[in-house]
Length: 342
Image (cartoon, rainbow, N blue to C red):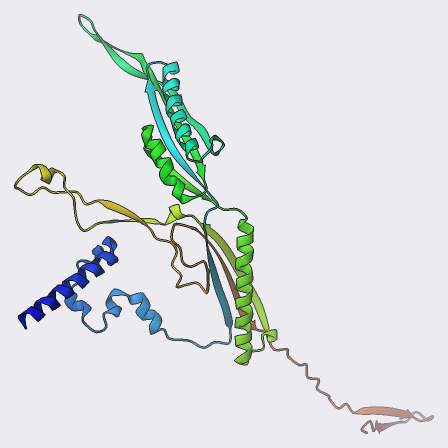
């Protein structure tokens, strides 16, 4: 029996380790949540109020109809451009430029050997300025401070275009071997963005027709409604959606040098890609993504309000008594009534 209990405990511990590995470090931010509270009923109202409000949402009927549809498409980049910054100093302008050229030529040679030609690289000169230092000259009763040329400093950016994300590792290696470590950014480019917008528009029009059919089945004649419209489109790149967090565990290299004692360590800041989530979208094209993508969206909102009813004009007939006068030759007047009733 004791052996059986030991086996059960080992299995439970192993399952917890596996789940922890799959959960990842990001969830460590919830470390302060009491485990007793997790077992309490109604926990969603505390830790996820947005979902709870949506479930218990109260509907308010109205004769104004609203069709609000949203579509999102995840698009992989056609090409990428990585930008690295290089800084070089030297005693003279010629020496500084020569050292910079050697580093760039080394990068080009390594990349060309790995299928990235020189036509996919461009150099952007940022600055080329002299550097001065202050020379102190001591005199009998004073000191003189004079700026004298010390050397030159050259800064350039190298733009490298590639088509596959697998090539980026090769680019990093080539730059590192030339002592280039400053990655400025990576730009994403897609071709024929109008085709993407057209595809989203077609999907939204199909969905709008389905909504209109749905309202017709419910008994609403949309021909008796006035229509107002608003639409929008947008395009987001991965650089806009990187977020940071601090891992729960800390690493201290100083502790490795000491046999005893406690050494405080700074928690490492990590970054992760957090794209737009899908809960507010009616249509999502290419929803499953493996790598950062360009997210293109479109929204269309229609509001149907009842047309005002036409007022019918009512004509009221009034009876008018018509009379006529008969004047005799002797001057007497005789009044007669004219019967106009039919």
